[in-house]
Length: 471
Image (cartoon, rainbow, N blue to C red; front, side):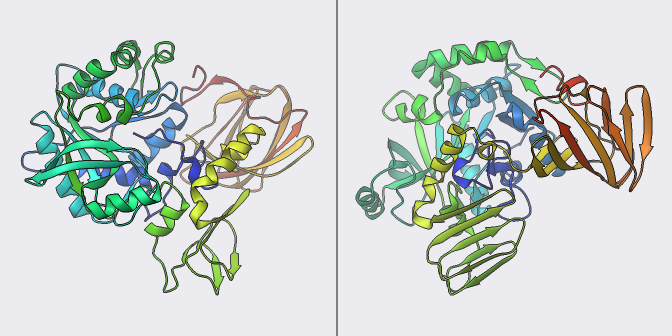
């Protein structure tokens, strides 16, 4: 499941480029790590088939590109709108069981980290074998502190490494969390579970038939091409928004549906907030973690994440500092869960920083808005080899293009020309145009826009390699 927005990791994570697509631990992104972990579950008695990714339609090209980087060819299911995890899971179950198949589904968020891959694989393989008998299996993380930010699972005695689930409990206060830790019968709810497709659909039919009916209608009216599966937007608008836990899992204990828990002792971290990133990071003798160009003096238990420039800090204790080209966050580490309040305020005020970075990724490359003022904007644009922007026009702006590196193929009205380094061209207001990279190296240009309105919605597309004229 790759549809989250990760607002508590702002300003690095934003709605247009959320945390699962960031490399917060290691070289691979969290999403790539999650896919590779699940693809590694194969054993003599376990075959792993093509993964199903359920995600936001706005992130579709990011999902596809990141999977191609790790040589994985998935089924990508695009949610027409956000409806929480139960409908997302149901779409995956319907797709996986098409043609009368009934596979065991290993369901995982795409934004977690695992420190012990071998322990993870061992636990998940046990969960798969248990789920194959018809049980729900949830992964419970053995707690090492009285955490108030997670839901908990209360389990009965284990048999063969698997326990029956007695109860799901909400996020506790500090005193209750300490009691859970002392009693030892509680684990954190990891958000990962394993179940046969038929069992999930039967449980949803029993507990929330309204979700199943509406989701099935959307899935049956889906459109497919070689890249994406698109459930019907009109039908999906009628799907109730609900989580997997509330819709089904929390109703299973004591019901006709057998629900079990397999302990996960694999250095799990959900990276739900900057404090969790600090805990998952490599730290020095004073408990400090630094990413990027950072200088720290006389500081303790502090995380500094620099993206685009040198960041220096002096005398900080238990603080988070995150720098990006267009925003800086400074927060007490113990209050990092409250970062989402900043994101909410940005949205209320109509500021784009809650959703987009200055550098915006597109299927053909990216653009970076490096300067702007009244009636002008300057962008740095990169186009990947063989890629092209849509054939388009603008009602309110003209553009100057200057090639910095590579070769540009420019369509402007009836003309088509090639430009190389240090050459430039002018696109008049209202002229149909296209930028393409016919070469084998990245094309970079500087674009200077001028006009009465410079918003990204002033684009009329006539042709597009990525299917965006009608989407």
